[in-house]
Length: 203
Picture 1 (tube, rainbow, N blue to C red):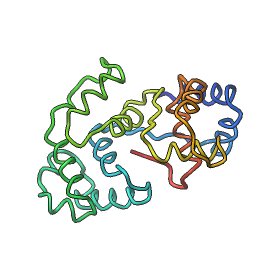
Picture 2 (picture 1 turned 90 degrees about the vertical axis):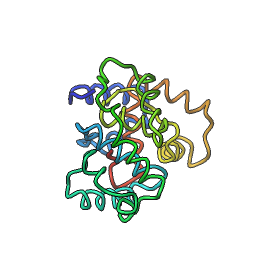
Picture 3 (picture 1 turned 180 degrees about the vertical axis):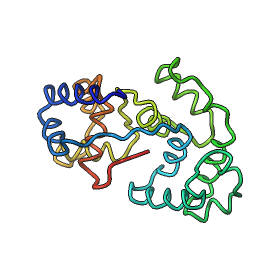
């Protein structure tokens, strides 16, 4: 899904299969997900964004970039103590998680040879990376096309607002939408996020 034409194909097929999604896509016509070429940055930024708002995560990330002098990489992170990392607004746990990532050799993996589940299982070996963080990596770094991160509070809220009048929605209902959106769940997810937040999600 790294090519612009793939995004356009996804938009067309989602719009054809789902009238509500079509309206969301039309609302943000001309916008699309921005991919990150740096695997380390995607993982660290995803950890920063765990369980906080997009706005709060963006604020912490900017402070971390400033601390690293706009050079967020393993060597840079390893040069700071936990206490120094916490000065940008990271919790003790998140500071430790980022240090774990910076010391791991998993990022040398040839991702193209692995399927989505294999990548999730591999990344989750690093303490601090769970399924949600691994899914952000699949979406924003690897551009895997069919990821629906159901552990994402924002995504669930967006589905409830757009498809269920803001009421709670069951897993069975979400599975129906997954089938409608597949094989482009990643693109559907991005537009649902976009419908909820004035700041586009970006890991």
